[in-house]
Length: 324
Image 1: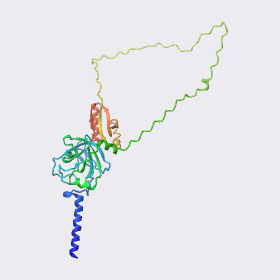
Image 2 (image 1 turned 45 degrees about the vertical axis):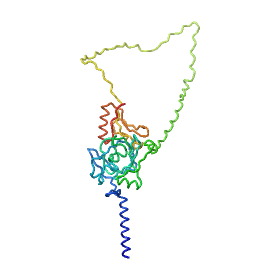
Image 3 (image 1 turned 180 degrees about the horizontal axis):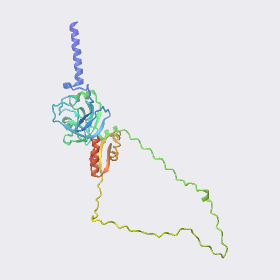
Image 4 (image 1 turned 135 degrees about the vertical axis):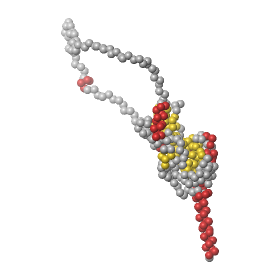
């Protein structure tokens, strides 16, 4: 009986270790402790991590690989050749789908670090992830980052740093399938027909007939009781002499815009408006299957000043758009 009890105890211990290995992967890499984290400040900018289950954004992706062996923001060891990424606000760890907009290629990535801390960049890929996506020689590359909840089989592969199966569906087709339908604009009500107001009865009545003069009687001249006209006088006011020669004012070049971001979700684009008072008019514009938010147009001086004010107010992804 003692031998049988020891055998059952060993079997239970082996099953427990196998379950832990399935959840954690190599060297204690685990999804059990998910960290959102407190707000933190980098280079004078404060970031607010949050658990955004519907995160979906378009921006720039960079990659990093020279920090091999250092500890990531959630306590793991960074391996540049494995599939991982850094994000400024998503929970650690979390999983995202990254799509290169120029090729439509997609990969799944596990986020376990913080960054990148540059305007316009929304994700920092490990060198292995950038190579799998085909963006190593194109960084920073335009990408779409969308949070996903993959199967446990895919999570185990990504926790081990391996590449999950690539997705071949084009980015444009996937954008069209995931965007919420835009409700049709209701037709404008027909303009009411203009109707003339009824004229007063006094105006509709025919005027009384004038008395006919007797034959041979001359008609008296018409007399109008008007005041005599006053004589019109014009006084000339001499202008003061000026020694300054007139100069020609060059027209101000316009057409500069400050772009706050490009999104696949109209709701996220609308959330940036209205802009703070004094920072210009902002608008959401459709560009293909995406939504662009920008302010303007300005001349170049106004555009650069508006960009500086927007970044000071927390719009760190704002960029300057030159006129065509």
